[in-house]
Length: 70
Image 1 (cartoon, helix red, strand yellow):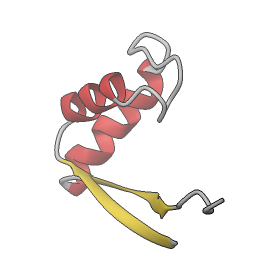
Image 2 (cartoon, one colour; image 1 turned 180 degrees about the vertical axis):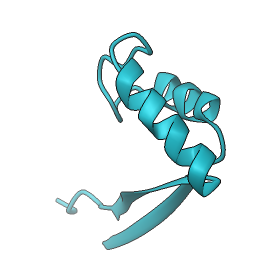
Image 3 (cartoon, helix red, strand yellow; image 1 turned 180 degrees about the horizontal axis):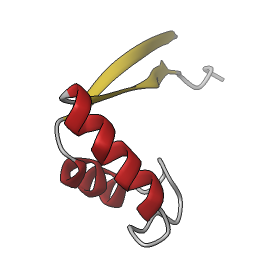
């Protein structure tokens, strides 16, 4: 019936917010732990310190469908 794509912007101002997000939204980085991604998190922390924030985008789709009559 309907398909609506959406591009969403996420902006993080500190590494703790990134870690919290990744722990809650487990399908973004399956198996995420601070220990496993420590090096990448340190690099991202340095980027946030230098730039003021980290911006990510994600794509989502709303699909409305109906079962055919009969």
